[in-house]
Amino acid sequence: MQDLNTLTLPDLFHELTSRRVAGGDTLVHRLLELARDEDLGEQGDVTTRFFAKPDAHSACDIVARNDAVVAGLELIPNVLALMGGGTVRAGARDGQRVSPRQPLARLEGPSHAILAAERPILNLLGRLSGVATRTASFVAAMGSGVRAKLFDTRKTTPGLRVLEKYAVRCGGGMCHRMGLCDAVLLKDNHLTGTTDADLGRFVTDAAQRARASCSISFFEVEVDRLSQFDSILAAQRTAPPNGKIDIVLLDNMSPDLLAKAVAMRDNSGLAIELEASGGVREDTIRAIALAGVDRISAGTLTHGATWVDFGLDAVA
Image (tube, rainbow, N blue to C red; front, side, top):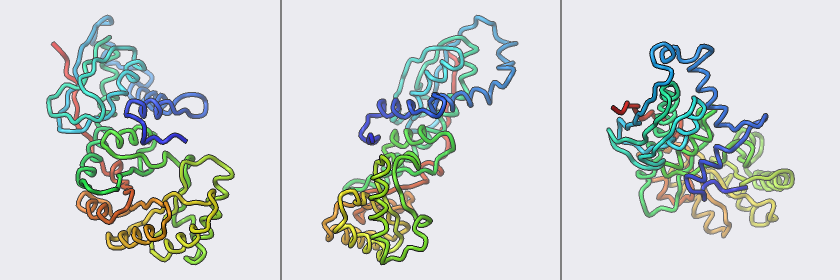
């Protein structure tokens, strides 16, 4: 499977917005249709219909109201096309930090299309830029001199996942698995009833079965105590290639315990990546990263993000 984290932002946007659902439509096209339909309903834009001339033309600038890392500008042509047409002249790019009153793009076209597209565009920009801005703050708080990279989770707004994961990349973070369909992550609910002593053999066998039956981007297992991790390391020393575990998620461990897990992994000589999750905040992420883990995943990048304010200002 393609590693999304090696793609440039434009290539990532194309890859994610090309993903299709049953019936042939892309996920993003279906999302944008829902955004259009919830606003226009059955009667359309009654304000513009009765108070704007049918052949009226508009030119408007999208303007930032806050400091932010912007995400979602790439969507604007898609929204305009769905609403009836128009052109975009970019003044900024996704992943760029912008300042208040900074124009980001100029939209020109039929007034009915520009006015119908205004709220879906600003809503998407506000949400996605909020995710990108929060991600950038966490990346900055993690600081330099560490090996860890920051990853998102599946704690995303239903229907917006591919776009919110794109926004995480715009903020300098990384995409974890896209969904249940592309990677294996055995969590505590999957491992109920498995003893620490049996865990290593259990997950090694599970990895073999998974790789024999489907295509996966990685195999990961969650542990919340070092005795579980020790069992995995013992089994992995003699595991066949198709039984190898790629990542172990260390759940809700203190930096001291994380550092011990890193030492255990390093002493084993195994090429297993270690991911820390749980309790990740701006004031804790630096200590977690200094423990030496390879990855840090944080649902708060998406579920804790607040909107960024943008406006659409008519050009005189």
